[in-house]
Length: 233
Image 1 (cartoon, one colour):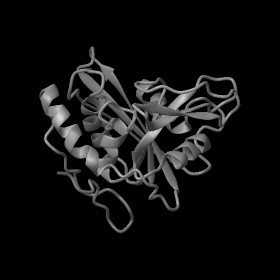
Image 2 (cartoon, rainbow, N blue to C red; image 1 turned 120 degrees about the vertical axis):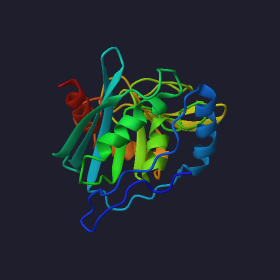
Image 3 (cartoon, rainbow, N blue to C red; image 1 turned 60 degrees about the vertical axis):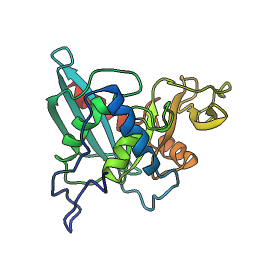
């Protein structure tokens, strides 16, 4: 099973190809991978000084046959674009709810290989542990890269929560089966909440704080916005 996926030179540049576990061909194989790798998720804050945050996003060409994966690296806390990469590769897995990581992570790993500035934290446009098997896209990417990750989803996938206050920074726990799996967070006063969950090497309260700091003006974090603009451009 995977170790830390990035090998770095003395300047912090990515040097060798990231190793990957065998990518599944069936739902049954995908479930087995999720069940095995979820024990590797670290749900505690291991971040120290965060200098660079990254966003990742995936779009599609040719009726989903080709994945366009973008990674953008921003300085933190001033959120200025430092590096970006866009790659196109064959789409690895069909669209099936609950298995988005098998569709998008292979292309994202290809994009991460193209950058030389290693982020301390990646905000993913998707779920972390707010997932039926507690292993969404943010968890999968974090475990494979060894980088801290947060799931920042536009919509709720599973779980329930109380009404979120209207002010920026208001949040409510997202719960499933009596377990807190994330938070419904209002990043801007009067906008719809977004859904934040642990990906890897971060706790929920820290994840909420980082998302708010990365979303000073708009509903979505600047990391998500910049990566989305790159895939759409």
